[in-house]
Length: 479
Image 1 (tube, rainbow, N blue to C red):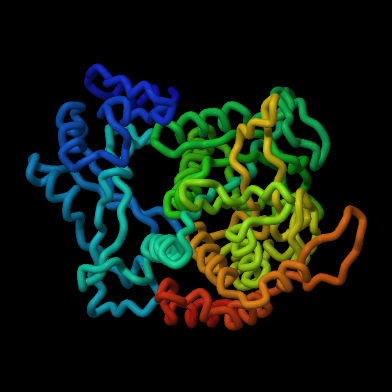
Image 2 (cartoon, one colour; image 1 turned 120 degrees about the horizontal axis):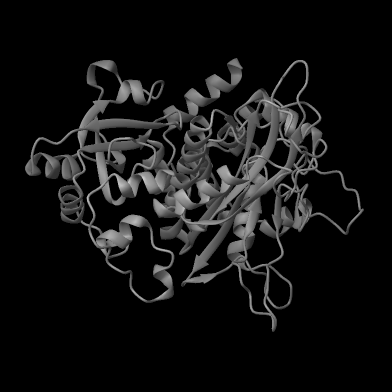
């Protein structure tokens, strides 16, 4: 049974409240339709009423640990007041286990999971009706926990906005491989020829479409989904057929974009498990084949207006220059968060639509940073938001730390004295022209050197704790 159908059938019926008639409410998530207002306006009382009216017995506090994986703490509330306590105060947890290696001592390791009522959804994969509430982390002093990835991305987002006036929006292109045993009924194409393929020439279409629907229903907006180029035939050494797909999420504020990537991967893994298939986000599945990137599209907003769009004279806006200039300077350092696997370097060295040099340009799919074209309707009206695309990260990325690092890189670009010189030196030329650009790091040692060189930019405004950078450098040197 479809997870959303299962979710709806498992609960006592209550008439859904129609969403407001404005365009911003379409398509509303399932809980927005039930509660009758947008998620950002939900209160603890709204969730308590939902749980009581719908007969929900399980509450799950879900959060991101230091390793970037989703963690869960489950409850069965014994009373209405117990439920209020859970949703308002959260619960303690062992920070030394959740954030190992960050300096939290075992003898003083208690932290608090603090629920965010506006980030709740019904678990589409649980046989028991369960309300999931996403959480942040608080330290013993009652302040956001400095080493929490959730705290870090929110601090970076806030710091950028306060210093530059930029509200940075982002979306992730979540590429993934699905694996299955071959059968006599398979009808497939050739290696690395799967881009935008339709069924029956790909087997994962239905799973991908179910993922799109689930994400929207649980409150994580999407842009689109499609099959990707990477198709790998079964071999003697690997008896699975692998095909590649992509889900591109919608532009949201930086902290929400990080959550969206993690939840998207969670949904895909659950669906694949239900169908007895494998789902992997590895940067490279087999040498010589296309790997899985995690390209990040970015849109700086100032005064509510998107600033990624080049001006009428073709020149970049100041916020676009800050972002691109920061990324070409800190790109190698950001690999500590965005390229965390040995396979990351294989993907980059192959340069199959993956950057191999520190270069930016318009439309160039081998660039570190590119400015994609924008779809327009007749008359020139833009029907999608102009973005700046950072193409270096891959499926091994830690989304929260990566997006926090991007915000810090933009601050660095904002303060670069010779920004025009940095941009000119790293700009790609006309098609076919060759330049001697700086290569991206191709080993963990080179990533460590870049991270050490730019650590002050990442630690600015106490966004990344120095101890976390020290620990990361030690880990990179030991690889």
